Length: 500
Image 1 (cartoon, rainbow, N blue to C red):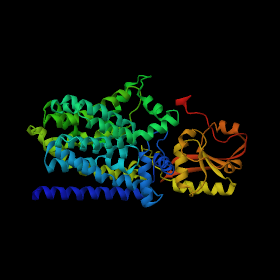
Image 2: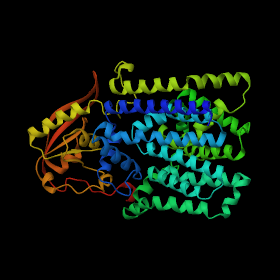
Image 3: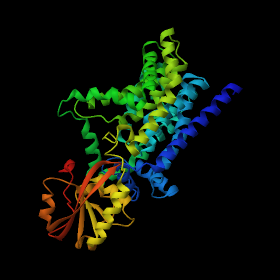
């Protein structure tokens, strides 16, 4: 490695470490989201699968809390640190596919300044480990291409297996890899080699605990998630949301570079055929499915996580590899120069807004419902009400409120979701004694009250109304009901709709 390349590597590493450090600081003081609280509860009861997703997010959170405890930072620290191996994988992928330290360094930095990576590794959802695993899928496939050695297919299988343990979307990697091998003549010999099939066995072995868990639970997770692919209500309006949300998640300048790169790889045939087709198949196979999905339902922006590694390599190729005409060259240079500053500013603005609401003048925005600002104070008030009433357990009606209550109430407090018990099937059954006396219910204030609770308990008395606030903004008002005289099983054990 020459002196210039060594300097690029060093500077890139310093930038990425600084960005990871910024996320760690933000993670320590940003309250967790309701999804993170839910997955944190999963992490206390590790299993081969869960109602909503495979188990990797629970493993990641468990690893983090072993490092930093049951705190906001503890929930997130391991996910954030995974950005370091992710950056290495994307750096090496770009270096192999398009050559040169500059393309590789640009890929690593651009990925880290996208909101998908900066926020996506800070807010721990299944998409966080999926993004990391997807980077290694690309890297190991690039190693297959570079070396021609079959043993790298075992690493590909391990990466795909880790991706499948993160989210079911990873099943599209199999189709993408087959298309890549079929589309590139010099790679078709792999169909006659045992190595890709052995790699498939590795992926299957890693994923097998999820299959076994589903087999023991009426295939409920598979039915819930894979059933989303059916178009029962044609509503193409959701397609209009795809590009705007991805411009935001990629950040505008990175999105422009990525679009330029995909165009150049496809129409200008920039780079070697195998490299171009690898990027295109890993990107378009999953994107085509999400376009299909959007014909009947909303596609959340973070669901595109597995396409970001190839998209970012395409963006880096557009910035450093493709030979452009002067006008396009100026656009690419402008985007490259300002992409990192814009991404960092967007990340900082989002963190400030989520925690304070300053930037919107304390009005509601997209973060106000999901980020648990105000929950620490609200939980202290709920605990005071619970102690005064003598209640032995706290009930909630949705998984988000259940997660927040469990995280912010004193450790060891009995907290249960009264319905949707399939979400908690991996948890031990609560002590019946805790459900035999007085209970309190915490739920958003509703004008019609809670008819189901009125039928289940002899006496339902509202004893408090408490507010969750972000600054002067009231986010939610909760009714606290004292429940006495249960007429039967407190918990609704009806089977989930997927298996009825």
